[in-house]
Length: 185
Image 1: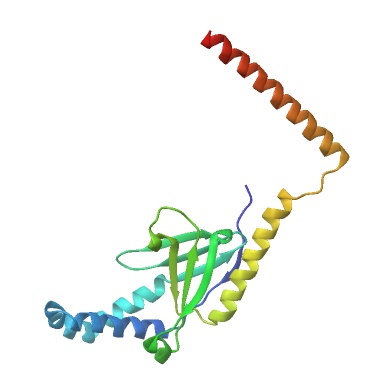
Image 2: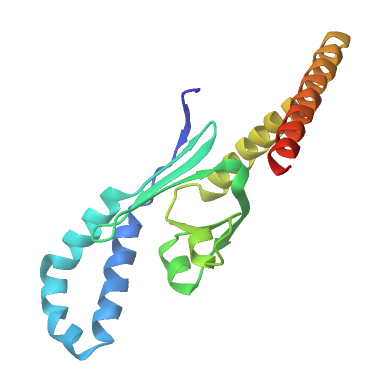
């Protein structure tokens, strides 16, 4: 097993804290109970929570994976194999643009039918375009390495080894067939 090497460690824009503070405020204003909590949010709770959330943000590109961590109450840590990344896109609504933030949406390959399990969002990475380029570059390297091993040129000695291996497999299958036929008789 090879060790993972961190190739790029993302930094995050401190404006994420303000964005989270405003977003929390908007959520509180959207409910009757939330309106009662607005003074607590404005007088310090919001700044404290958004600062704590900002400290939980972490994102790294390793030689094989993309690792991401975020959250206070619901802490999320994801490790995505780079070869499973299907799409990287930028999302930027009016509020994000106002704060100068970018949301990188990552869609991955995978079954299960739950679209949200195959998606990850990273908010506020500094120099997001460069970070996206680094992810795609490393992804291409991983895919190239994976496929180059499978397409290695056969040498005469490896052809002989493969022929012997196939002959051995054939002989084992013949023996298994004999045993199965004997047991069915």
